[in-house]
Image 1 (spheres, rainbow, N blue to C red):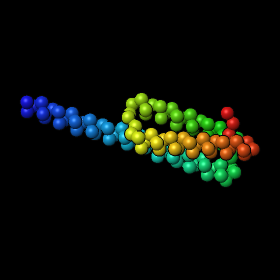
Image 2: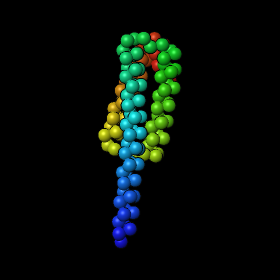
Image 3: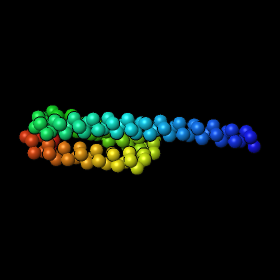
Image 4: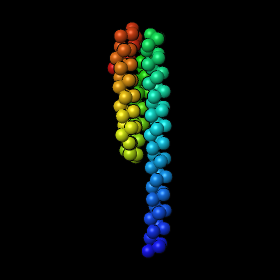
Length: 108
């Protein structure tokens, strides 16, 4: 009985540690995603958005979406992380729509 209790405690500690790492992975991804969003928001609001920027933005968004899907497959996102991701995605979509009004702006 004593050994089962010790084993259970060890497994619980390992589970807590692994969950903490996966939460940190998600938080790191969200921090990176926020930097990308802020970069493009600033670029678009300055009106300095070229066709090359449009191409680069499209590539980066695809990479970020792929990374998010991969993380969602291997980690469990908490409600706060899901909401943050949704807000960042909404912001990048708003930036895309604004860039469409700039000559040479974002195009699909």
